[in-house]
Image (cartoon, rainbow, N blue to C red; front, side, top):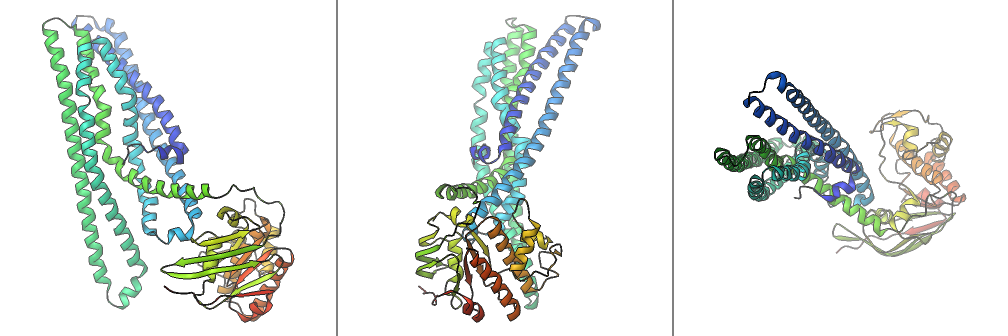
Length: 545
């Protein structure tokens, strides 16, 4: 666990702004602190020398002004920390969603989705402590500590040497404490992920558990995980309190070492009172930022652990992007392109879903990919979209990069996922400037011409039948295909929930899209779809190993 991961600056632009503001405020705070100690020491020495209140008034006013400046700087640092944490969390979450979309469902299938939700939710929220407590002290350590040591050296070389000798003790103990904190913090995070995953599974299957009378066993399991989480949390707190006590003790002993040296030299007269008092007031400020870094290290642990998991996802997504060929920009007109599969093999969950499949899907034709359940139809579509790894080559108009294939393909899957909003907003999903006329045309081609585009719908598709919801998804693919000039349109079982009349209307819309030059591929086993196709590709049952 690194106190500052460079990837944070790369993936969250707001973090760079936060550091710039932090450095500026750190310099102001350090100057104000040095000035405060200097003016205070002069005022005390003047009072001891018998100066009157009137003579001390300028020093007192200056002291008040510097104190207000220092307090205001600390307040601004707190506000900047809270604001920086909020913006960075937002940027990382947006990048995470984009990265997951880039990696696709195939990558997600091998991961625990509850862990991802926990990381993106509670994990990133832990960055509040990282930004408000840890990073400001880290910045002050890099700025204030060297400046204060230089000032002490200029005033008293002996005290400066003692500070430099004692200062490394704090980082040594910080490293030891950090190693212990990292281990227990990681265990705590893993237990939290297990607890979240188990709880979500229980809630999802609660009805089934109740029917079979197994809910009590799950309650005991959750109770056990909760107790484990409590134990791990207490371990983290124990180390945190111990680390705070240790660092405070080392800091106090270091300041005491300087104080003894100053006191002895004040007694023998080799050091002036003004200098000695100034050094004594300033010495704790040399150790304070470093002590606070160590004491607040545990506050950063949760956020850093979650951020590391997110950075791994973003790195993987970036690697996929680098491997893809550079896109030529959005098309401005439809370019007829054939879809070519060459020796494509797909393995899924321990079996061969597709074995050395080759075919050419030509533009201007309605092609049906048929076959029994389990023959690999959906696996081929997933490979086309880059959702699953495969062997062989898939090209659209000669372009094989996954980004090129996705940008040239409009796809409607078997399920009908809808979003809260209107029919129009669901059809034009992803469009920067939705075209109402194009929405109506897409609905008409999907055999939904009589449906009001402004009809509200929910995520469950309330107000629509299953067949209508499926056709709204088909209209979404049609809208994208026409709006973005995608040459390939893929529909996976688009008429599964339709009657013969609605199916015939949908077929007319698909035929019209093919006549306009699109390469239309329909995955279906329905006889009417197969009969209406220009070309039929039959897949056999997938081989098993």
